[in-house]
Picture (tube, rainbow, N blue to C red):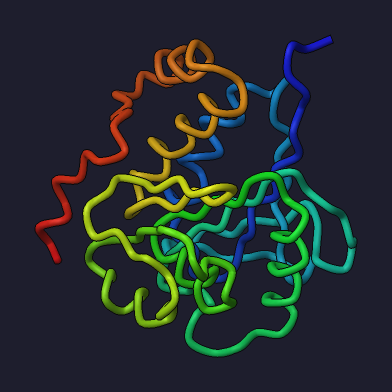
Length: 204
């Protein structure tokens, strides 16, 4: 038996998602396949096209009505923030209510904010889109200088590559520090383990 339970991780995908937002964190979690079971979830069963043109086929859809321990919401130009998407919004609300942890990368926090899920919480987002995203969450305490922010069950990261630093922080919380350091070593990744390290905040 593993020392810690295997957690189910649902990663939401939508047309126009940022590839590193999604696959960067999944590389970290997937390295510990005995600890995290990853499922790509989309609104429908058809192929989803990333911002960079790659087609990805989801493992599951909203209609499967599965419940997951963890959620990962990537960002990207296609993040469905500006207009209500009843199926996406409903799935996100239901899953967030029962999930142990909810993670977002880049503009993914805007989707959580627009649905009121980050109200009363501290959060961050991509610094180049900070003001735009913050506009969708007037009741969120937006942190302008942070690589990622941990507040209760919510982890929100800055832009793109920051999601990998956040993922390692989540591994540290859910497994242990040794596991996080081992993943960073295996992936030959220079982990910025200080959540306040943010040289990109000057872009604001």
